[in-house]
Amino acid sequence: MAQTEPPRCRRVGILGYGRLGQFLAGQLLARGPPLGLALAFVWARDGGRLEGLPPPLRLPDLRLLPQTEVDLVVEVAHPCVAREHGEDILAHADFMALKVTMTKAPQSFRLEGRLREQLAVAGGGRTVLYEGPLRPLCPLAPNNVNTMAAAAVAAPRLGFDGVRACLVADPSVPDWHIVEVEVTGVGDGGRALSVTSTRRNPVARGAVTGDATRDAFWSSLMACHGHGGCVQLC
Image (cartoon, rainbow, N blue to C red; front, side, top):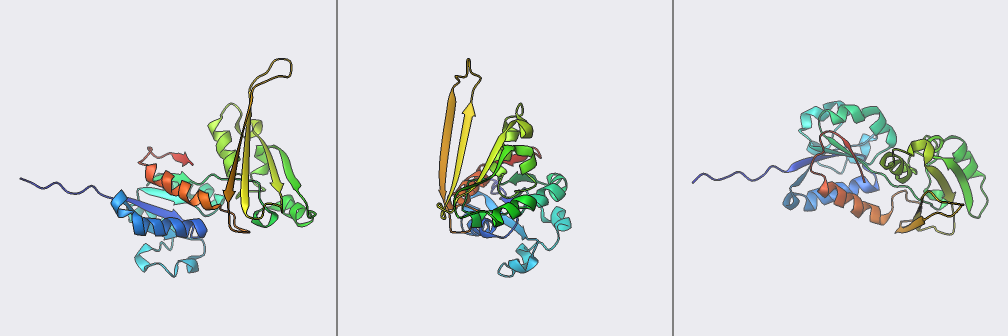
């Protein structure tokens, strides 16, 4: 009787080797094989950060990605990586992007342009850095608006112009990231159903990524079985 070959592990590539990238790479190496997952490669904009990895797992150039036989690519680097390389990656693998944003202590923000200047001169108390339509905020806080952007994609009738964003720097929460989502229905006479959800994610002081985010991302990775070349929001 012929023996059937064991199913092939899904090969996962990681773009970015910061706190979250290191966690996912470690999980794939330690726990991946029994779950049908294998680490294909890790790429980082600063290749020197990969020195601790075996050479076969280091991808020096994203142009070499087609040679890796990767099935799933996880971006945990910077939004510019998805913008510049996402289309090419989707030609060879499923692409899963990380979407998280929250109210943070000032030192946990990664801001651009006028928001960076505004944060630098903010006082010692709670400061609303931005409040308004989401679209103008995205290029000013690309590492801090991911949850908002995911909501805009998930609600196409609102989109990036209809979803409103509020970004707050609060030094009284140095080790928490707080996300509050409010959904309001169409009302009559100023009265409408409103549902508010609040999430508090513990975090190391000054870190951009919350502790629970790592495990949530690992769970999403395990659940992703291929989606026909589309982007998965998690």
